[in-house]
Amino acid sequence: MALNKYEIKKLDLPLEVINVIQTLKDKACPPSVGGRRGFEAYLIGGCVRDLLLNRKPKDWDVTTDATPEEIIALFKDTFYENNYGTVGIVNEESKDETLKVIEVTPYRLEAEYSDNRRPDHVTFSKNLEDDLQRRDFTINAIALDIKEIAKNKSVKGGPKFSGEYLDYYNGHEDLQAKIIRTVGEAHDRFTEDGLRILRAVRIATEIGFCIDKKTEKAIVTNASLLTNIAKERIRDEFTKIIMSDNPMAGLVLCRKMGLIPYIIPKIESTVSVEQSRSHIYDVFEHSLRSLQHTADKKYPLEIRLAALFHDIGKPPTRRRDKEQDIWTFYGHEVTGAKIVAEILADLRFPKKIIEKVTKLVRWHMFFADTEQISLSAVRRIISSVGRDNIWDLMNLRGADRMGMGRPKESPYRLRKYHSMVEEAMTDPVSVGMLEIDGAQVMKFTGEAPGPKIGYMLHALLEEMLENPALNTEEYLKKRAKELAKLDANDLKKLGDSGKETKEKEEEKKIEEIRKKHWVQ
Ligand code: ATP
Ligand code: MG
Image (cartoon, rainbow, N blue to C red; front, side):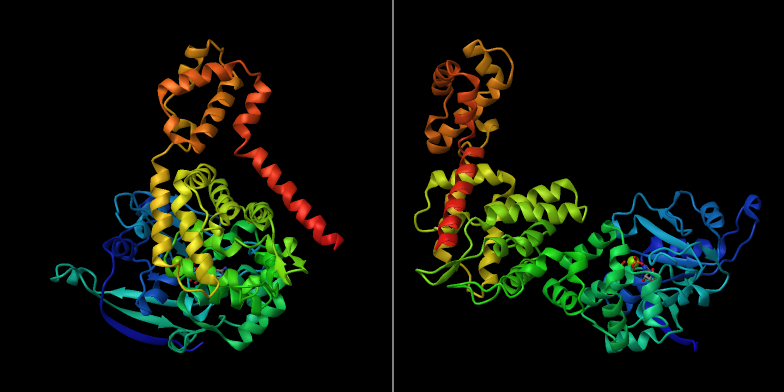
């Protein structure tokens, strides 16, 4: 391969990175590991790509001809990362998250891949060229050689560095043309490691590039290789697509190339699911537009996931209302909450994220009847979704509306919601906010510790949700004494009336509606 070299002057680089490269280049290893010195060390991969695109690198990778043992011997604080020889150099005191660990990997040779995801064995090399050849895309295979470090250390406004880009695969050309292209034969590169399929889409989405025709063709042909890839790794790439500035474009690209069945198969069922009335888009497009709005607003992952999946319960709940000549989706938020919990668990998302997204999806329909909304209804929703999630739920609603292609909520209505939520937030919406606690309940009623105390507290909360003015020690004390006379089962029912019982009633209602439409 022809080597292209490009000089670069006045490069801004973090000192932590410079320190790693300088140490590798200058410091001698102790005799116990051979005493070698003067290693080759280059910045490589996404950080070089991002420097060339004027983006802030997400992490810093260094490639070197030193062995893992030699790397470890040169640095104070290191850890051995994985089976590929990568050594993490730790900069505990760095304030920048991206610099806390800098990864140094020995040059590697491309090896056999018999399982479409991992090389059968790892072989180190003494040649940079070998290492670049095994990398996935041309824009990720440019090495940056940092030069003249020491001389420039005291320049005004922080040190500047000069360097040289080493580019064997026309990565520069592809960067300029905004193209993702594999290093070498696309088909072979994807069969070696199926994850590269998702990396291509993810990187294209993050930096707004196109995928080269041949590379795209190989992705389409090899899409099913994603079944060999660990769910956690699929989740990580999927998350990066969702957290990018253009998740809608990313998912459209995934769909175009037939990747959805291997990432989030259930989303396929929303395609072409036509809706009625104010909905001008099918469920798929509406979901993507809602998601895009959450990205435009830079919302966190949970709200973005909730926006993408908020209507995932629509395909299985869609019924035709013949009288009104419209499509209905009764109970889609209940069904959707179950489906989204399954999808996220399948992708191995952490429990906390699954719980939050599920809650948001479950309650996203709450604000539907805006005109008749009462304060006690607002209190109930806060109690159900949780005080910590209520503003996220409001933001999800905003995204839902924007995804319908409708203008924003009228400022008047929005102000009304906000003030109602704020007002309700000062009222008791959880057991912890009652002016009485379990110990006091036991003291006033003489009850022994046990589940009955919890049921009583929940029954009291139920009353407070209707009428928060009753939240005084005096009233609660009196009421606790009355409640103590009931048996545990009746108490449990009282306490559950806002939750399980209501949910069951709701589901029963939905069933009835469904039956009605089936028989029609
Ligand atoms: P990010 O901006 O997310 O860090 P990245 O391209 O740097 O993107 P990393 O996972 O940090 O991704 O990988 C660093 C480099 O290692 C890549 O740029 C690429 O050169 C190489 N690489 C990573 N994963 C693979 C892979 N599956 N196959 C081949 N090369 C890979
Ligand atoms: Mg990286």
